[in-house]
Length: 116
Image 1 (cartoon, helix red, strand yellow):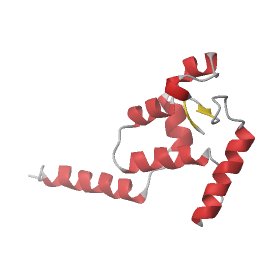
Image 2 (image 1 turned 180 degrees about the vertical axis):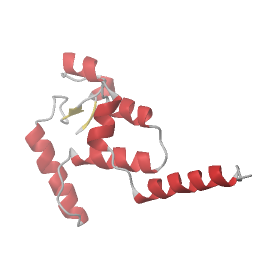
Image 3 (image 1 turned 120 degrees about the vertical axis):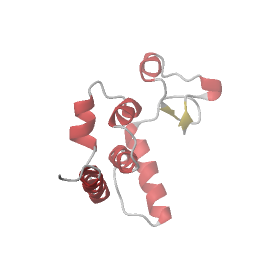
């Protein structure tokens, strides 16, 4: 498996032009999603990790990037979503650290403006 075929060329044609990249076999043909799932499950098993779907990596990626303070618009672009609402509603969850950060910022703002 690899990205985009030998020297950036693969038989994915129109799909690759639309999505800019694809997963392919060692002979350059698009990988069958079922085979991708099997290969990923094998990697997880050998690493001693619990079984998850390959697609779940998108959720993890978006949540981790958000938790690191990456702007939602950047995450939207990385995931290739047409609308930011898809990214916000589907892939991101406000973590406890982000909630604490919001409260800390509110405290700082209120401390900077004392009551008369």
